Image 1: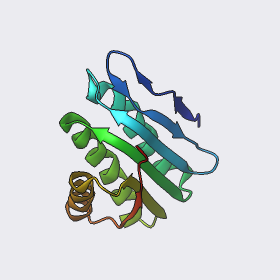
Image 2: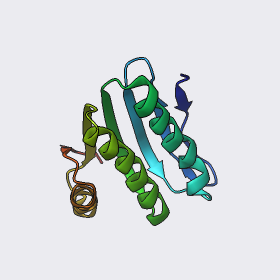
Image 3: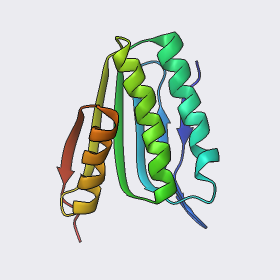
Image 4: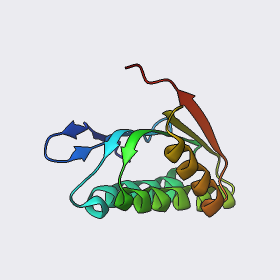
Length: 131
């Protein structure tokens, strides 16, 4: 199984950095996600997770370090988390660490909503953004 590595960018749209590693199960999304076609961007990530959870079946450490995401990205994140929840429900080992700006109350509420919507335990890890 191939890794997925995408270098983030801030050109016309904000594309997050992605590093999904099939060898060690570390999956990270970071930066900002404000895309023209969010579904098209996240579809291969969702498919990768479905393949990993169906074939590799090793523990997954899912790390999110998004400082901003738009509404359409929110739906794609929910889709990713639902794949992880299905994997966990079928005996897979999943740890989710979500790093967020400690002053971003909206982001913290969004993460809490994801926990309610999916039933997943998400470790909230606040950080301080320097000015």
